[in-house]
Length: 264
Length: 256
Image (cartoon, each protein chain N blue to C red):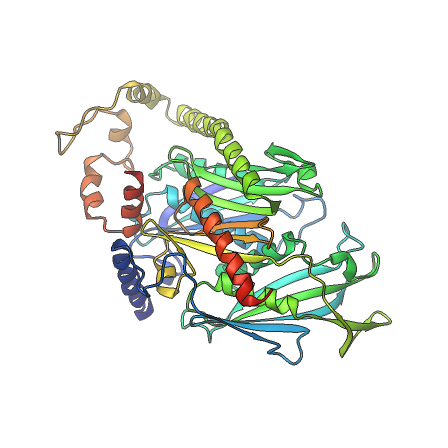
C-alpha cells in the first residue's frame, strides 16, 4: 500500500464515523451542494467554454467543431462526442497514460446525459447529406478533483454548450476564428445529478473523502421539464428501489436550483 | 456469448492487489463479427465502461473479504449480438462464478426493460431498441434481497414511467433467476452425480434453530467433506464478527 492509500483509508474512516453520528464532515446538509462559481468564455479558441468551481473541485469544458463523415445509419445527422480527462494535475492519484475506466465512464455518462436529451438538433449540423457533417466536440478537463467530477463536468459542459458560437463554414471547410453570428440552439438543458450512498445515507455533491467512503453511486440526467435522460449506477455496493426513487426526487429538486445558479 | 472465471488467484500487476479483499476484474469484449457492421476488435470505450459497472455489480454478490490480495478474473466474449448483451453476459457471469465454487451472497440476475413504439417491453431486441422513442434500461439485482447492483438507462422517460419499468423488471427477473438456478443444478448433476442426493436432502431439510448454539453442527452434507473449497459455517463466524468493514455494517443495518 502506498502512503496515499493509507491517507484515503483514514479519510474514509473519518467520513463514516461522522455519518454514523448523522453529520457530514463538512457540516453540510445531506442534499446540500457546495458553493458554485461559474466562469464563462474562459478559452479564446474554443467555440464555447466554461469553468466550474464546485467547492474545491475545478473543471473546465470547451466546445469545438470539426468536419466529419456522418455515420452510415444517420446520413443527415452531425455528431456529438464528449471526452473527459482527469489530468495528473487534478489529483496525485491520477496518472498519465491511456484513459482509466473511471475516466472513460466519466465522459460516457456526461455524453449519455447530453445526447439522450436531444438538446442539440444534430440534423442542423449536416452540411452535405451522406458526405459531410459538422462534429461537435465537448472536451472536459478536470483541473482539481475534490469529488463529484460527474456533476461538475456536466455543469461545465452545459454552460459551455450555451455559450457555443456556430463556426463559419465555406466550401465545406470551417473558417477557424470566424463565426457566422449565430449561437448553437439548445432544445433543453440536460444536467447530471449524482447521489452517493455511504453508511446507509444518501449524499449529494460529495467531496473527495466522502467519495472514497462510497458504497455505491447513482447518477441520472434530467432536463428542465423533469424528463429523465440517463441513468448510471456504479460502485461495488447496491441501492434499493426506494433509495433510487428518493435519489431521483431529491436530485430533480437540486437540478432545478442548480439551473438557476448556472443561469441556463 | 461465452464466460470464463479464473480465481481467486494471484494479482498481477501486484500493486492492484487489495490487502482487505479480493478484486474482481471483469472483461467484456465483442467479437468483430458479432454485430451488423464489423466491429474494430480493439476494445472501445463502451466495452471499458460495461466492464467496469458489470464487475462492480458482481463484487456486491461475492464474499470478497474472504480472499484478500487475490483477483477473480471474469472474461466474457460476445460472439453474436441482438441487444441486451451486457445483461446477458452479467447474468451468465454470475452463474459461472457460482459454478466455480466461489462463495457468494446471492446470484446477480439482470434484465433489460424499456419502451419501444409506445409499448413497455421486457428484453428488447435490436429492432425494438432502434425505435425513435426507445428507452433502454439495463438493470441487475441480487434476486433474493432485490438490491439494485447495476442500473443504466438511455432514452427520455418520466419518473412515473421509470417506476413502472422498475416494477416490470422486478417481476420478471424471477423467470431469469429460475433459469440460473436450474443451470447450476444441472451443472452439479453432470459433474458430481454422487453429491446430488446429499444436496437434495440438504435443501429439503428445514434450517436448524441455531439461536442458542454458538457453534452449530448443522446437517452433514457430503459436499463439505469432499470439496476442499467449501467452508463450514464455523469457519466464518469469527471472520464475520471481526469484519469492521463499514459497507457491510451499513448493509446489515439496512436489512434490519
